[in-house]
Length: 194
Image (cartoon, rainbow, N blue to C red; front, side, top):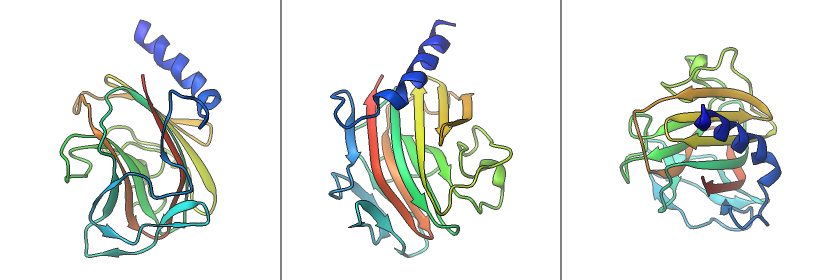
């Protein structure tokens, strides 16, 4: 019960604390530069109008911007925009460098047209479904993701979409921003350890 209370307190404070001025937060995407990301797969990631943007990839594999640092218990605040055809997401606790997928990572999905919509936008693929699935296309959205041990909370635009537990990947792991299809933009991504 103590851990559940700590998670609730962290989630309640997230939107207040998610500020670039807060020294506890590490800025991954600041809207001014490409940041310090590694790359897995090939997409045309670039800076455009204050956001990291991709709208094309080479080959059949999805592409990722990946952190070199790893986190176990953390909060992420992210601002993103996609079109209707986009397949994207924020991959967390990725356990194998160079292998970014929903088996070796948790995938907080951004995919309005996913064939199985229960794991579409707002869900964690193969962990927590969202029914009905919210739509994110055509507007700026926020994700607030809190991970503490085996407890995961996802808030999309102020609405909780996931409150679940899973022990498959205990962490720590790196973070990946996905480009699969359509138009994908990230203008702010912040993370802090818990």
